[in-house]
Length: 492
Image (cartoon, rainbow, N blue to C red):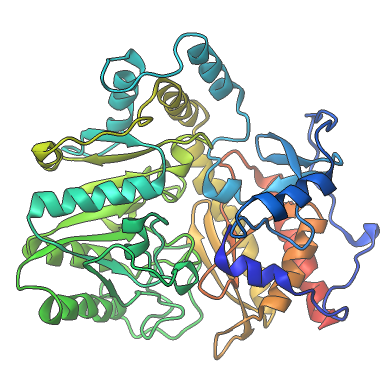
C-alpha cells in the first residue's frame, strides 16, 4: 500500500509504549441499527498467507495485525469477527456518501441489468446524462469532461492537455504533493516515500511547499481554517506575508529553470491530502495562477480529495482560494468507491486533444456513469456539503482541546478534511517517532476507530470520513483519540 507504512508497522512498539486499556476505560462506540452478516469466507490465516505469497510486497495493509473487513454500511465497517469500526478515513478519502449507500447500489443494479459495457465507439445514454450533471457543478466554461478510471490517469491526461494546449513542456508542482503513481503522475508527486529509483515523468519542477506550520514562513493568521498554527504571525490585516514569500519561490523557478514565458502548467491540490492535510496561505494560489498564465501556462486543480463538498463551504476546494482553474482532475469520492475519475476543462483546451487519437477503454462506461450520477444525486438530496461544514467544524473545535498534549503539534483542515500532526516537541516540531505514532494509532483501532496516516514522516492522523458522519461519531472519535494519547503519555 504505502511505502512508509511498511516501515511504520514493521517493528513492534516496546511494551512500555502501548498500555492495554480495560473495557471500562474505553469510550462507548455509538449505536448502530445495522446488523452485519456472519462472515463465511476464507480464514484469516489463509488470506494473510496469500497476501504474503501471491501479492506484491507493496500491498501492505494497515496495522500489525491487519483487519479483515468483509462488510460496510454508511460510516461503519465490520471485520470477520463481527467487530464494528467507525471509519473516519473513508477508504482513503474515497467513500464520500457512505459505504454501500442504498441509492447508489440501486442505480448500479438497475444499470447492470441493462448494459454493462460499451466504449465510446457507440453512444450510450448514461454517460451524457452524467456529463451534464457533473459539469453543471463547475464554474462557467469548465464544461467539457473526459472520463477515466483513477486519479493517476486523470493527472496524466491533465499534464498532456497542458502541454498540447500551451505548446510548452515544463510543469510545476509543489513539494509534499501527491498526484498519483503512474509514470507521469509520479513525476509531479513530490514525496520521497513515493519515489522509486527509476525515471518518472520528465520536465517537472517542484516548488517550495507553502506549509505555514512546518515551512519557513507562516503563522497564526495565514490559513483558511477554524484552526490556526501556534506560530507567531507577522502578517498585517489584509496581507499574508507568507503567501508573498512562497510565491517568490515559484517565480524563482520561472526565472532560472524554464525558458522565459514558456511554462506549460502548474498543478496543485487545494489542500494536500497524502502530504498530511497541508493548507496553503491565503491568496497564495491566486498569485501563482496569475503568474503561470502570464508565462504561457495553464492551471490544474487536483480535486481528487478536496472535491464534492468535502471542505464544507464550497463544492470544489479551489473555490476557497478564489481561483478558477483551466483543468480540474477528480477521482475517489466521485464514485463513492467505484473506479471512476474525470478531467474537466474548457472547450478550447479539450480541442487540443484532437491532434491524434486518444482512447480509454473503460472511461465513462455505463456502470461507472450510473454510479457517478447516483452519487451526485445523493449529495444533493442529503446535503452532504452542509454536513461536512457543520460536522467538520464541530470536529475541529473538539480536537482543539488535544493541543494540551505536548505530542499534538497542529490541528488543521476544513470541513471533513482534517489533519492532526503529532510531534516529539512542540517548539522544534520534530515529528513524533513512528514507534510512538503507531502506539496511538493501534490503540485507536482497538477501540473501534479507524484513522488514516500521512505526511512525509507518517506522523499525521488523516481524518476524512464518509460525509454522512454525525456529531455522535465526532464525540466518539475525539474521546478515543484522547484516550489513546493519554495512554501513550502515561506509558511513554
